[in-house]
Image (cartoon, rainbow, N blue to C red; front, side):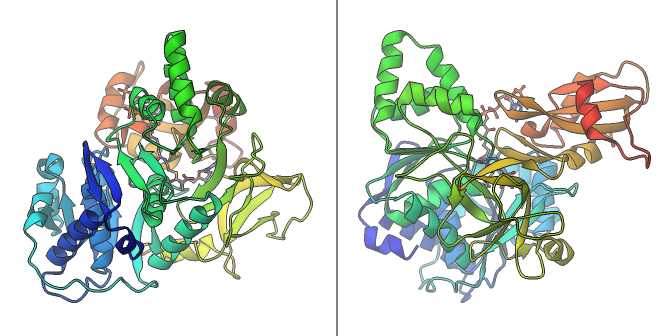
Length: 490
Ligand code: MCA
Ligand code: AMP
């Protein structure tokens, strides 16, 4: 936010066809701060949830909350009511800023939970008084909800200092410049969109253009017309872009490919980038995708090089300021190459805590402050290669992290489900797809009806796409469901 003062007249955001300068962004953020503060000096880390699609207004709210000393809690615009309610309750939100499209959905819930309901329109008439200086670095800035090995998502709290470090390391490593222009097609309740795309661009005086939703046609058009200089996405999006390109005429393919060649950087992350996608993308655009590795709790940790080597199937080396090690089962550092171990990370970009979960926070760190990622990797000629995760209960689909346990807990509430187990199955397009095995309470369960019911409870990307009715779930000698044999059943 401080940097923005130096860029006041530059273009900051393109949103719904309108171009906004940094000066306009700061003015709008000030309006949000003033309205939230209503005369007070600071929000003192009050949780301000907001449900606003990726847009100029989204960033105005985020900056306004930060400037007023609040903790920003962005809600996912695609989540069904129970998921939104969970975040409002768990974060103990004090206020909720609501885009007009979501007022009806959320008004009653906010009233029930005693959360101050603030329609977005109210911010255009903010009272006029001085806004405080930038918040102290140690203050909590943001809570993002992430699925894990528990059945409910946990709130990952980052401070202003954590966020600043997460941005600085990427701006340096990927050589962001004020002349860059990026398209954001990612949801803005996760680090990939919030930090890597939007915050890095705005830190650098660059320009962000928002697409409310991903559309392969529009992304290709933006690349072809030279509207953007860089692009970042999850592997599924590159898969979809390749499929779109393959459906075009030879002349159109040429036009799209020639345009894409002009970008200065294209990045893939959030899930493993399959080597065939990397190679196909290179043949279409001439770009070797830069793959990097990160996590909500730590920001980005490993990255291939902007100017140097980008090795297929590898996630590169630690980013500046990131301390990273591999450890064995006894948490002893592994120094040799080609030996798998858990990735642990330490440093100023690592989150502060899981919101109101001191036991889970303590468990996530070693005594000397290393964060246990749960991801397994090996070192291979100086570069890291991700091998998988230590838990079968975490699924990555379309770049989203999904907890099998969460889906199982919800499914068990359906009257047709006696027992169930959820796994991830490999899938070319989505990385993994969610699959559910069900022991039904009566023969021939109607999986379409169960799926419709589930859609009201959990986000669409967490829905099982494959179903199987079984007489019993495979279990080990102590009665625990064994998920590897279960995957074989599919
Ligand atoms: C959606 N569909 C799916 C899935 N998701 N089917 C199978 N598996 C899925 N995971 C179905 C929908 O239900 C629908 O079908 C149809 O696909 C189209 O849905 P829609 O939502 O419109 O799909 P889309 O717009 O094409 O979305 C695909 C997407 C999206 C753009 C790839 O999943 C996405 O934005 N992913 C990025 C997530 C992200 O930002 N992750 C970063 C977190 P039907 O009509 O039958 O329902 S990780 C992170 O931040 C860390 C720090 C990191 O390292 O980056
Ligand atoms: P999230 O918690 O949603 O931030 O997702 C973080 C997880 O995504 C990590 O713990 C990894 O399992 C996975 N991930 C991120 N980037 C990569 C990558 N390049 N390759 C493999 N897995 C990745």
